[in-house]
Image (cartoon, rainbow, N blue to C red):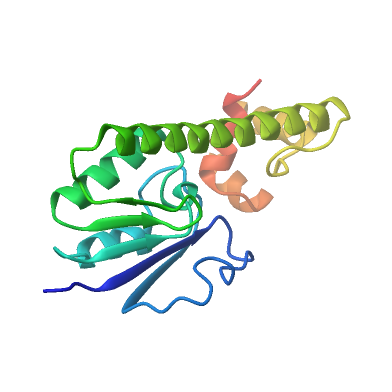
Length: 185
């Protein structure tokens, strides 16, 4: 009994193109995510995992498309191969079937370590970029909805007995935004 050939494709953002992954190959089923690979909580991945059956082969462009950390990678490959699904990574030209092969396990761990390292480097560059932008006085994150003068005025009005709900409506913000602004500095 031969199983299905199933593709899992992932890019990090909606505007990225999936065309280069597994290009020119034909599959019985294909699942595509356009989200970060930081964890396994991805809609198409979860649907793909539910779909896969014994004797199927899961095709993935490269290891970092399936998982960005060692724990997730090892868990996914072990769970899939334990239920009889082969996992094939095309870029690395590696196929895992669950057979007891120390060299295959070493290869998976090394490639997983590289994917995890790459993810850590991305986060490091993001932190460095944000720190440099902050240093230049650029706004990081969402712009504050209330400026310091407005917060001071609201604080004084609350102290004189005005209702926070009415003030939030007047200033066009949610009550939670108003409470947060009053709680800060």
